[in-house]
Image 1 (cartoon, rainbow, N blue to C red):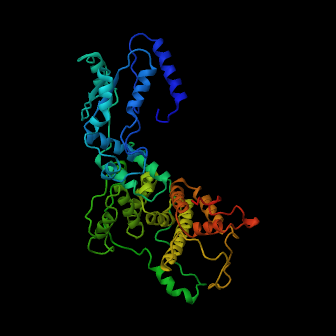
Image 2: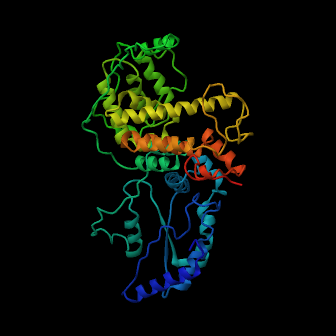
Image 3: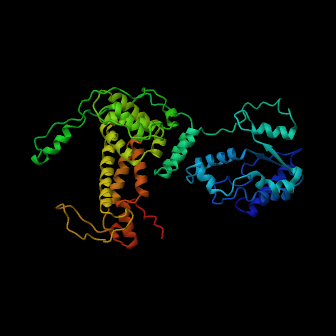
Length: 476
């Protein structure tokens, strides 16, 4: 009915009339959205503006007496329920106050919405109070009104579905997802994961771990010019005596998925050298996010060090990315995806994970360097380049230069990274999310595409060499 499809509505009503003619007695029909779209689902600010029209369409089209049963719920509880439904399926609102602010006046909503049905339909419009609480059954309440008090006592209704709602903690995390910069695909998957039960646990790892700490054998051919840099290599992952503050190997990650991280909103004192301080810093960084994000940060912190706890940290790291990847990908800032890439590079349980991690780590950090330089130059990230060919001399002898639209560098870089990502599901999913974020962001890749697009540049040899193999979606 909401689509104003007159022919379709007439056809459905004809089917209902045929069904009624084939049956004896009364026919009970249930339609969740008969009143219209839930508030916030569409662009309209009025609540159920077409309710009376829908009721008249059915009353005039169906044969015989038509009685409508309408559940009325305490207004604030009903509006909050509608808000939660919006959070589950849409990204429009980030707070209940914002949801209420979008709607027209919500004071006395039932009196305003139901005034006309009450006046026009009289006894054929019956209101059923909806009671809050887990023991209330809408089906039982409806049948009691239709059949009379006590009429359902003999009915077996133990399997009747109860109206369940997410916990306040899960609602808080759904709100967080609506503020996330992750891909829409990841946000949808994260919401679904928050609303489902536990995922299967990883019981063991078929692991071929890399050497840790990494080998630091200074090669004979090392140039003297690079000896200062080699000192940084030698300082990586030296032995540290640290306590193991990680949760048990078999901890219930699905419970931590639904629990926001509780931490003070002031940055803790003390440095990162001691894990007792680092856990406080991580708690601060991940406050308000699902607690699994904090656990991930904790495992990464241990795997940056040599502490003797690598087996424990690696197992939890792999469990997180096998069991809880949906929520992690929907919530984590990109900086933690990059940290994850380095951890796969150093501690992947197979060669493919290590290869994927290395490729994604260097790709993402090189991009980070480009975008930092762009910001230091004071240039907007989405502005096309003023030139379509190099306007200065190269500062790196022999490094190739190219004109906009005259290279497949961006396309090949992305295609090769995606090819590598396909070699391992666990690491590959993280790379895919990074690439989806890259695709929708303003970066060197999009600037190249946009500059080519607005200048209508076509080199036959590179006609299809856009960064993601398709022209950019640019709003004119």
